[in-house]
Image (tube, rainbow, N blue to C red; front, side, top):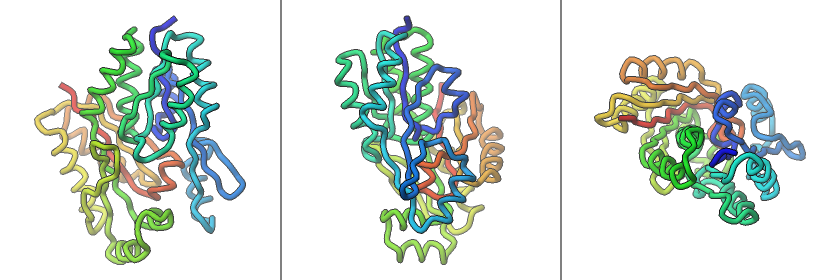
Length: 280
């Protein structure tokens, strides 16, 4: 029986192959097109965008139920003494509330950790926790590894259009129209409290990608080595561009090229992102 099993949620966008390789259990969020409900990850990215673009309204997204978390915890505790459950920022989703409620059933055997991030800003932390667990680390050591990663992880997201943010009620329609008219690409990060924070509004895709790389270099600081993830929603050309420049600029220990899942893409629409974890 291992010391610690790792659980996360599907907003981490960890691929099934990576999850399997590190024995990470992923609890899916869900999205609904009217009465049709899909678990996150069931639809391919192309299928999701085809449906979303044809729908009169944005799909709605829902956190996992308390019961869904409890079922996964129960299963993981069959082969581990404890569970560390690692999740999307509590400032962005109620997912961690469901996880925390479910954890109460298991007393001190389940510990819930707020990454204060999402997508691969979340996933890079999950991987650090999972690797510590794979080495036989105790709960306190796994949490220490997660806390260290949380302090170091940075993520930037570029959004092609403001349409989905406007349709979801997150910005005014006038702002969305202005952004479309000026061909503005909006760059966001996630701050220390786990909330979205604007980085810049850049006119044109090329300039926005250049600014993304400038920001990445700033966040790496004096570090030359790191683990990176390049994410995209229907933007594989941008992934290729960013990967090439990251590899040319830094000592890349690992780099993950990832499609954004439907739950994340519901709120962002098409775009790209880079998550990074500086390493000594």
